[in-house]
Image 1: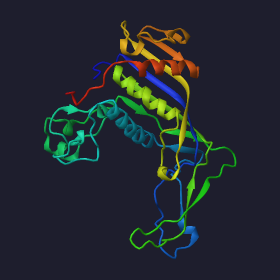
Image 2: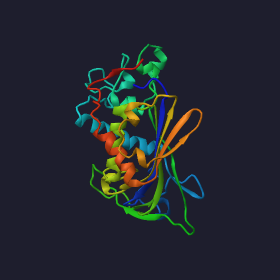
Image 3: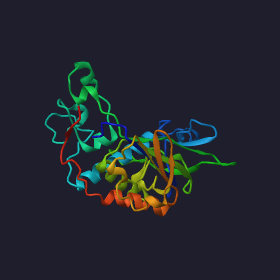
Image 4: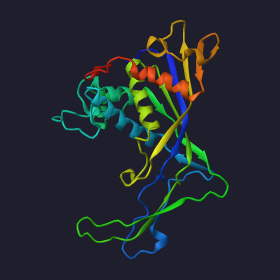
Length: 290
């Protein structure tokens, strides 16, 4: 657990849609016999000139992937959906102690309502601040832009009857959304997990949005920029030590900070590979953070 803001790591790139993307709820509610005009499910479209992919949507699927990665690496990670006391993977937001699993240390969590009401000295009452931050992805709609239309035929799973033919608006494949994350004061294993996460995004192993099980929301990350800002006279070894591509970085110094910047995709991949190869172990179980 990092206790000081010694450095900030920023990764930027483009998320290219390899299949159409569906962002939006299942409204209006389709009723049998309703007109076609009422059975088109709109996109989440709050801006006239922009398409938006909420940072919360990205954070959710990325956290789920990090949980899988951490478990493969032998670390015990909670399940945010499990609240029962008897559950072996009980959510950190419902624990009575001061220990937080690796995924919750990296992504954070809000205190539970019962914890806030009880005033207990535990993580369920305090919550935990995220190390990794996701920005909303906004891209300008091109002139003459029109959303795609995808036909859906939902079934009543009890009667096996067709409910009503529906259509849903989707963002067409090939659209590129800007991608940006920041890590505030990460330690070695934070960077190791993040490197594996970015690798999976680059290899099209993560889908975002609705209906991903039906082929929607497949994305590919194209890396464009990596920035490491260090503060003070000492640089954190977990971030800077023995980075093989350090010589290719553009370096800026001022009174308080030293900034390293890479804009070549190959050099950025080299830095991420260095972090992934780092043998810093993940915590095998929860770590006391308060």
